[in-house]
Image (tube, rainbow, N blue to C red; front, side, top):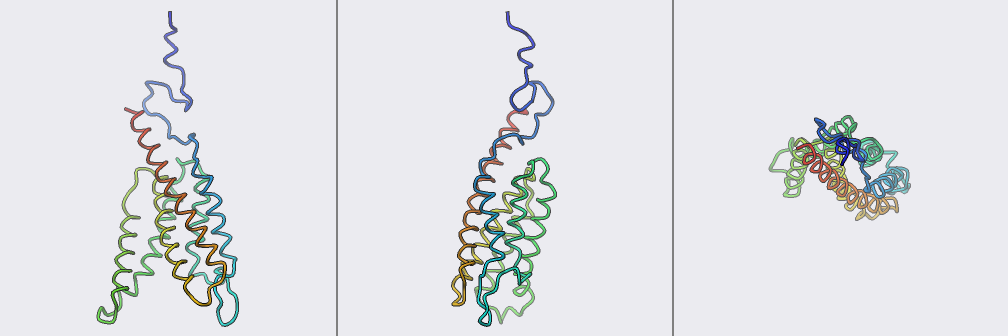
Length: 208
């Protein structure tokens, strides 16, 4: 005869069958961190690396606060990868604000200038920035999904920025290291986004 309490044994996640709501899948193994943590760390380090020669002097991004956005976002992504997914609300908001303000900053010249003085590149750039901001504003199912999405968007934008910078005749090795770090972080955050989506789907199916 089977023990009737056997069906009430807790699962590995600690949830008992029949409970009103299973816990957030924070205890799952987040394999994306094998790439998220080192790539974001490397990009943060790049803020101190010589990236561009200005007036015959090698300069690092740390000397130019207006260009800190990719490195600040990398630091936030690093922190988010270490935090319990159920407690990422504050970091998700911070990432959305930073990316949104940066996008508006890049779009401002195109929005305020005389359209007759702007070329096609300005209109295309402004449109892309608008799409990015719209993506950031669109709600996500969980803060973790929003953080991962912001990481993908920020990494893609940063990659374009560093790739454009690398075409300058005065570019230094820091820009190339940044391209490698940003590319890796883009892949890591895309992996994270997919992982969060799968976890959310499993959580919804378990709660039914």
